[in-house]
Image (cartoon, rainbow, N blue to C red; front, side):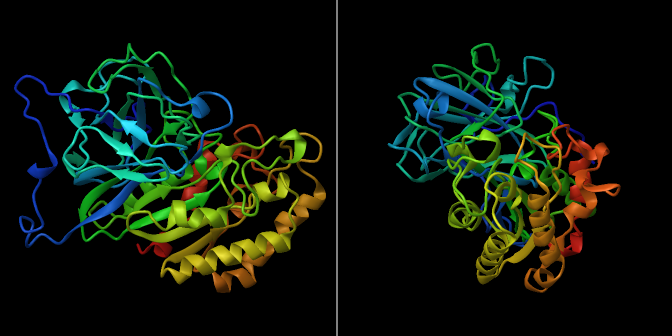
Length: 436
């Protein structure tokens, strides 16, 4: 069973060629013909993140200029080859990628998680070139790279942007320390040049796919901050979708394990835009993302090999916006219909308790009644519409006071589960609903 990782590294932006170490290019990998008799090779999503426009102020608005960003992620499933997806979906101009590399962390050092193993650094190429442009509103897919990836392995991606990017396309809640430094640092194994250490976000990076034999596809989690890991330990990959991936791997430690792609966005709502203000003086931000129905065609359906969607949304519509149970149920039903219309398995989670969170007006008895009404519908009539209902409320609530989280599962803000609560959520997903 994997243990929490101290190192989380994804891809860097240029290949490090060491003395005596040959360069690895996409063309060096085996072909489907080479694999004859071993099953057809297919691409599967191993890691992904939902993205939004940069906020109106700060680094995500101004962008990067002659700077490198080193980012950390953890895969779910592995394979002999990988490809990396970059995105400029919400950019205001074309973005030049000067260099990109992928590497493994250097666990022999203790330099803020920023060091990579020099022998592991490989250059990412794009249509054979070492640099590329991501058009405005577009995605950029790297060439396949022979780079064996293990299940739940930490990888590091480093990207270099030689000219000003403008507002970034990013994921605002990474729960991992990432690093920014001046000039091209993509082949630099040490982290000394990375002087900015935002504890927040992945920029321009949206996914990593791996090649597998007869893959069963992937499970997409469409959620909010509870799935995004607010309340979980930073740099430890203890979000409940991470722990679900661990369960799947333990249950089926072989090639048929599905990947788990966490497309949660902290603050996301079913019926409102991220920039809309909420109760308790909450101002709203771009990084909370568009309404969930608008996210289906951008965040969910394009994912590599998606077969199952777990929707866990609605709590923010209640506390931020005071939506009715009818409005929340209507959107959940519409999400379900669109997911099933694509031939995908559609699962849904009940809304968890949050009494004690925030100031006046954030939690009220009326809002809790709305939450309970939505959950009653999900457990009743909704069960006949969805392919499965995951009763996260029953798992996390305090039996002595069901409007509150069980203290043992409370991260301290009375709305987000801690690591133990996240594991309880992961354990509450019947694996038979995921095909196991």
